[in-house]
Image (cartoon, rainbow, N blue to C red; front, side):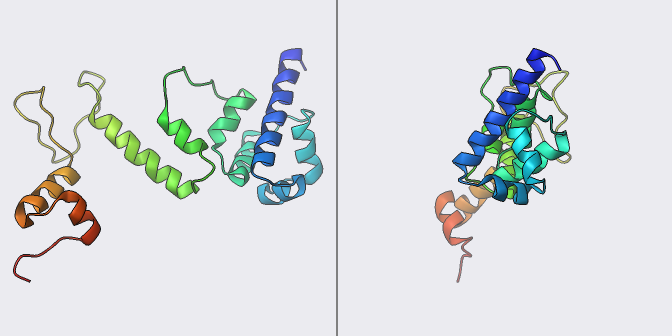
Length: 171
């Protein structure tokens, strides 16, 4: 094993240990949650073993961090290019469940797609979507159009509609 490879394993192990300590988990408890043996996890933390992508995924799930974070630490994936990446930050948040992370990332990416510049590499519009004659104007998302329609129909703000539900006239 090269010196660079050994250094990477030691750094990966130190990172996993740091995450484990931050999560206030014992080595034994993390090994149980990740489904790996206690001695094997200890060897990973000491930089003596190179875990597979599958083992890293199990450890990440047990630590409630993104597997991508561990893949970058292990050298499986390249680190981000330096531009801010909210999706990575959401996936790395230890206070969110995996389901919450996935939902937030999907919403975030859908908003990003709406505001990407149009061009040959831009994704096609969703079926049934209409675009204005002037390309500099954008069509608001369906959810915004619906909220605006409810507001004009019943005279309430979108925030009030969202918290109290739709109001039906004449009731």
